[in-house]
Image (tube, rainbow, N blue to C red):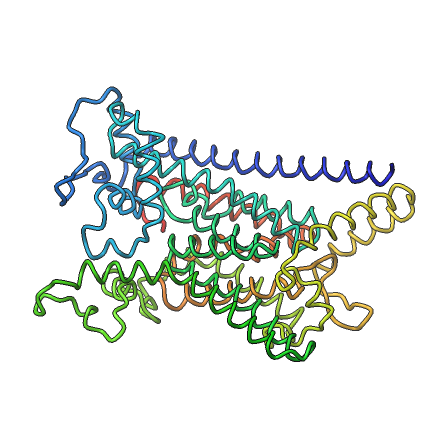
Length: 507
């Protein structure tokens, strides 16, 4: 009976915490919606061309010329579709009309088209078709964000094995600095949903579902193909252990082939979309009218569009006039650098060897490599045992309280374990399971700083879990850092909702 009672209490606590996270996520979306309406009503947009909507180039244009019942509401929704949202809405309505529109991947427009033609179709004569497209985009992305928060919380519990740390990290994700993009007609929410969902199912052993979700992330945004790195990381380590631990070369070959096939599936949507663009823009065109990228040995449309229309390229953004944009991106890049450097400080042998120097015991406990949901069970058992011990020992509770105070003063300094290795106090942030996330963040950060328009880094990196895990530990052990982290998030939420919603630069 005691075991059943403790298990029931644990399940109730899990449900309560999940509800709190969902409630926080919902509150954060309502807050963003309120801020968008507030700033739009108080300020005049910098660019008022958002409501302009010329007819589609194709003959099957669906722009409605009928009188609308609530035209002002429709106009307000259309006016809120700004920046990249204009492209996604236009593609959902008219398809890919121009070369530069192929820089925007099709999954979000497809979803917008389907929802506008089904769920919200009755609203077309009331507010207009383009307003319905925008409304569909808003609903899709906000619902996707709520679901992505649930996945983020579950992943954090599995890997960190600490519900409190996972809860803090999830709360930070709910109010992350790029929040405005998760509630706009952008791809951040869908990308996070499919990426985090794929990671969760990969940790839980659902490889097929994981590959499907990763592939959908690659159909949402170009950097979704990087999620194949999690598959490759798992396959390489399984093959390595098969050779050196189990002495089975055949098994190693099967692991590598399986990883390669799954990775190809993740790349397939990206490749298919590039082929679609090549077919539409290069096939059947006179040679003297053919675009230069069509004649390349590997005709990669996306790379050409980024360089030709947006000036993206290695070190191309390193100009004095871009200094304000570097300053705008400096908080997220600094946080990313600190989270990476902290992991390297704790586990340099993991980082520089890509985890191959980890012991077999550590690999067996790694959720990403074992592919089973052991972390959640371990966290449940650990939390259950600790609560029972604390009830029976007031002195132990006092010692733990003193230990926490000492930890605050030590400011998250690493502590040696009984084997002499350096590990973080009360942290699984230094486990090998976290390594692929840190490597992924390192690659994304370098790309954002050296190649992309650097101001995009805030939203480009916003779905990376190590940022929030590291911040969660900082908040637990450095009270001053908690203030700065929340102040940073609040400032960027206010600034982003003010500038972005009124068509001022904040991308």
